[in-house]
Image (cartoon, rainbow, N blue to C red; front, side, top):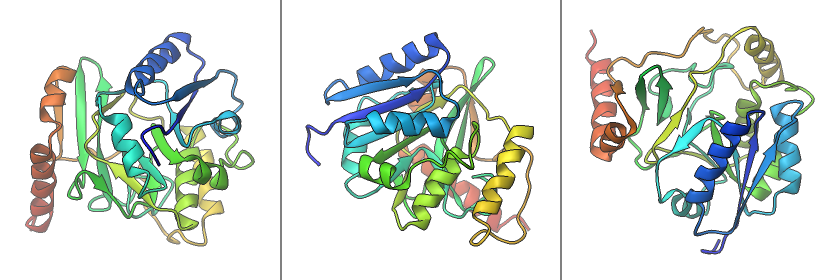
Length: 270
């Protein structure tokens, strides 16, 4: 890859304002690189929408992005283009061991990454296993708020439109299928990102969760936990009043200290 590498950003969105905000963000982040932003506004499912965008994409790097995230790192493009020389797929949070249809189902110490979620008047900052700063490797599955991949890898793996014909589990299936195919997945811990969502784990998620387990039953545990909501991450979460305070804390010394504290606490709990 060279400095002139091209990015293709694919965003499935039915909200014109969110799409405009996301497009403006990526336009700024990718200003120094050739890039295109492909909006899919009538996707029948996220797998169908992302595959449609992927067929149109011209970039060597493809970004599959939600329309409700905010990336706060001016070096985003340089970091991603450099790291995708060593990795096939990158994300912001994920798991080194997948045991169920929930990417966070294995719990500590198998989770990796750092992510902030906007909730009410606060920003909730959660940290998972950031010991391997700035990129955690050995990842099996990635959360779908933003998936960055080499175009050839994305086209080789593709999104399963037949099994996942809705809006859940497309991300776990794509990333876990890539891992099963021998691709190298990583999680970037040093790129501040805020997601304006805490996830939706209702009946539709359960439906596609059963499909995910059936598809990958040959490699997933026969018995696995069925948590109904993401873990609270005691000792590894913090509230911030605004993004400026969050950026001041999104530093290796803070993230590593939090991660090491959690490891110490788990070992000395009894």
